[in-house]
Length: 415
Image 1 (cartoon, helix red, strand yellow):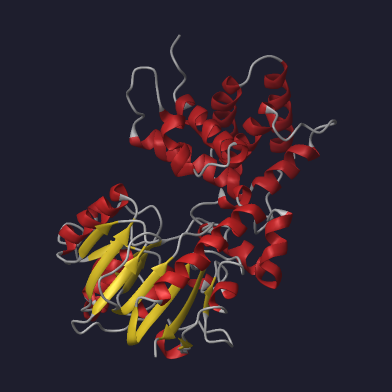
Image 2 (image 1 turned 90 degrees about the vertical axis):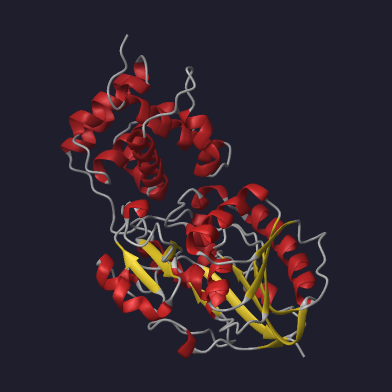
């Protein structure tokens, strides 16, 4: 029997959702299993993109979609009931992606059989008839809202939409020219922002390596090291490499260290495309030792990545206290090693794309070097350092211009 058009993408979206909520996987980790087929042929790119969009919007608005489902059922469906999962996907398509209800029904109900199919049809039809709507901002899971404190409401508002596309330019002096050529907005020297959905490889400047994709917040740690002027910089946990490219473009002689050869391959590709040279070393920084200290050390440490919830909404549901504690222990050990590799007078910058205090502020408080506070003059307009001289960004900042990923950044000088 022929498969209904659009059904493979919905089936893949259901697998992605299950992998994120039941197995705690990222959508990237779940990608292969969600799209594998018996004949070994992968899905066409539009199907893959649609499945990711459906799963992503479902995870972004999960609590509110569940509230809608619960409002139309006499007896609450179990959290792991397949009918609930399919209804989540159906509502996300209608309410977030603008899919007509008849198309949602035609591609959603085949995912179920028997009574659950009739139940899902009835619940969805009721909600369509009642014109149910989502709130202006996603409702955060209780544990997440508690951890993020007074900023939780603003952050939630910043998570309502997937992020725009940010580019970091190889030559910051050409910022105005590239913003005009690409029809984008610049929020800082060397930065251009474009609407989401832009096909990167088709953009002017891609082939000649004039820029690379990097969220504006992710570009701030390397900016805080300043101009290299031929001095040596160590980029730890460097892949996929945006910060290493920034440092090389700023005149540093870069040594990029990462434990994953596969992830370093992407840095090699971008280095070749941009013409920026650096030394790349595949090694675990907890076992590797440099031959001599460096004038600058940048540690963008492994973390829970809760600051990337705009583009990876699954982190809202898969990260909890255990994962945060595990990462904080690793970060403390990495910071202790990185602190020893800074030459006298050199700088250390520590960064994590996490909104958790245990991974940011708590780590910075124990570094045995002299703090070098971040200044407002070093940051894009609209951002300011904390009273301690650290930098904390989140999705609720610069909201009128499209927002930011969440980062914590701190800087020190070696004596």
